[in-house]
Image (cartoon, rainbow, N blue to C red; front, side, top):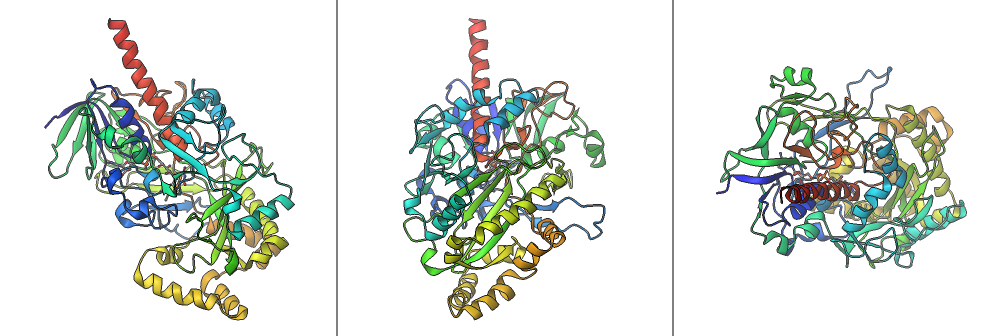
Length: 576
Ligand SMILES: Cc1cc2nc3c(=O)[nH]c(=O)nc-3n(C[C@H](O)[C@H](O)[C@H](O)COP(=O)(O)OP(=O)(O)OC[C@H]3O[C@@H](n4cnc5c(N)ncnc54)[C@H](O)[C@@H]3O)c2cc1C
């Protein structure tokens, strides 16, 4: 068995799939892709993964890291209760997040990338990253300078003529509130409401691995893919990374490489670095780890999009209608104008079906998140030096009060939309919602959950007084919408208690300028202080983009791959 490769990629997720394809395009380079989760070849894709409705894929324990627990909101001076740990889904399967995610495919704001450049990241401004966004996509609906037409990932939208009435009613309410209809979410970045752009073709998901690790790519003799293979650590000779350590049946214990690329995601990549001796020195010593290179930024600066939701009962005629299985058709972007935030800093997904079961078909939400948060003091730390033990993760949402202010203001904006006649006609009994452990448990696919929710759904469709009783006592619980709207302190308390992330961890190995002591990686994603090692995944963002982060992660992978291939070409030209 070959135990030397030119490149070893650790993690076959959104970034790793792109890199495996691009780096193995040169037949002279031997590439190994190691993925902890199971394989997902394109001819054996489970229905739940392909489904346009993603809710059964992203709660399937077979596709997830089992032990990830996180804390959410940052403590305040007044906090005395111990913070609660909650489960947090991250993919452990080929294709990573892109195999189980919500399929939203958007890029954030041009100003996000100009801000990266202003932070010292030469070559990462909007004009420099746009060609890589275009390279990835095959936009089915739109053409022009902002769009690609021949990439590996098809992008489409489901337009209003196919929307269920729940979505069209909220769109009508947004129009009445003064927002414009934008046919193309990925066109000019401005405020308005729009059909959500998705990585999907013919009502089927297209993930990074489906697009980039197709049969033809897998047939390349210089590309080896090992799935069910968790990398236990990195090998070093001095400060040069020279390979990986594996403890898996039928695999060699060590594999050597010219260069190792960590693409294990924003929670696992920093943990692997720290276990291998790269990180904050005091923290490493606490765990008895020998320091290879001190890098105080590893695991720091964790960012996510903090969210809250307003839910309601959807009347029968307005539910998901069979023309599509998609549950989220409509998006709404607006500028809060608060705290010096840039334009388009807030985002709302209009969710017409909140779970696969019959109750989920009857409850819709407006799910709001801060598209451009200020809070950036989340952290990933080691709970143990043992690679089998999950890292410890504190998101510290709302550590910057301006994020709390914007969610409180945003909740009132959603309530105002909910109160308009068009929305009241198709919904009833609105309530402040939270993604509690109870909601998660009922969302797990099981016969028992189906039976319970079938009965509850039939009762919800019964007489309105009974529905109201069930909605307040069984489904909602806690403060009512009227309570919160009448009492600002109670509303702030609700937002702090209900705020969760939307599965967008990022920025934990951020790229940065030479004079930035917390920059873990340079503008080519090379790990500072060592040689032969890069990180390429959502952890290298200097700041979280104003949108869903799968497409930006794939952009970063395409861009770094291009730099790596370019370097090889330049070196060969120099030697010739
Ligand atoms: C439930 C959910 C819904 C989401 N919805 C959306 C959405 O609709 N749109 C959007 O843009 N973004 C969405 N995201 C976020 C987006 O999918 C991720 O940000 C993106 O996939 C991150 O890519 P990555 O390459 O950084 O990491 P990942 O795609 O997570 O890939 C990391 C891979 O590395 C593997 N790995 C980790 N450690 C090891 C190890 N030690 N050895 C070997 N392999 C290892 C993991 O198993 C995983 O496959 C969602 C994410 C989730 C989880």
